[in-house]
Length: 102
Image 1 (tube, rainbow, N blue to C red):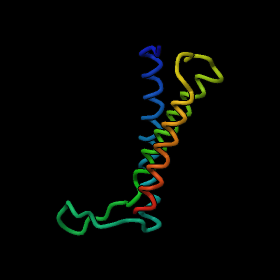
Image 2 (cartoon, rainbow, N blue to C red):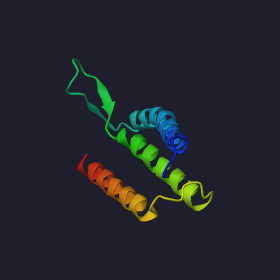
Image 3 (tube, rainbow, N blue to C red):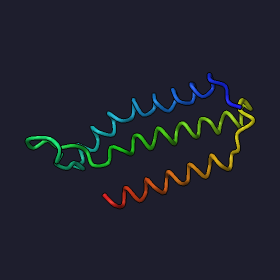
Image 4 (tube, rainbow, N blue to C red):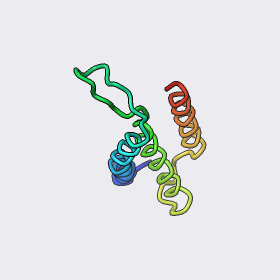
């Protein structure tokens, strides 16, 4: 069973990574001109096309942090590692399909 503090810690690590990396992704995507016109706003507003990479990165970082707690620090013992890795692979395949689709 996961305690609330461990779940909160994993969430905060994932959130902080996403919060810090997302502006960096947006700036660099604008520099290399990977932007599209936002169809939902008036005018000619350009938004980065692959900003979801920062969000996927935060998810990956959170899952890898949880795996490190399981394997190296033995903090979480009741979580099945196979399910965690299967969910990570599923999310990565979904992200890859999204990247190819853009």
